[in-house]
Length: 316
Image (cartoon, rainbow, N blue to C red; front, side, top):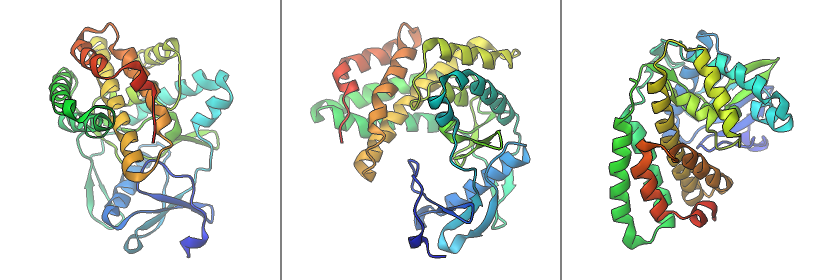
């Protein structure tokens, strides 16, 4: 098969390339990251074994850094709700049911297509902190004068550490880590989950924060609260106060990470399409930190260094 004759599909924010061939999807990785193909399939295998529809492996050519997987078509939940807003609540309720299924997964090890064993990692507080610090590594140098960067980075690092230490729940729940409606597809009227290779055992609130405070889809405060309450209704035995605490912290940390990642994609990879999403990521951070005591220090620092103008302005 000559990939040069195939037209690449519009890709994601990753190092992979996607092609459609014979009603399947071919994923090609770079040489230095081809191990991710093993992980990609291993996680999909875990999901399918737990009755969550995910792409099945059709064939693999690991030496040539490619795998061929099941094709779910082109329709995401994002596309559906953008076209028909009236269907939004219906689909989000279905997604909450899907999330509850994901959170029941206990599988910690799985055999890869090469016969090795993949162990699902833990999404530790250290990893959360390092991801949030992508904001410091990429966005701060782009927006802040060099003479002010060292002090700002020290202040933010300290505050972010304090926030991660305020997280209540342990890392015991299977989390997708990129759980939003662009990664949920519809095939034969069923929800299908994609882009799951970063899954880990982490905080129970993480995927809900990713779903509700999704930078790709603007939703009202009322709608966000409705979906939050829909999840709580199905998990009544949970400590709601602790869950809400973690949900808010994880949302803020995630959106700081997203601002950092989108800036990195522009600077390092020349992928500028994501920059236009940064102002809404800021709005999401503002919504969670406004009049919320645990975020006073963070909000004070962000307000001092990042004006409304800076937050709303994005450029290549």
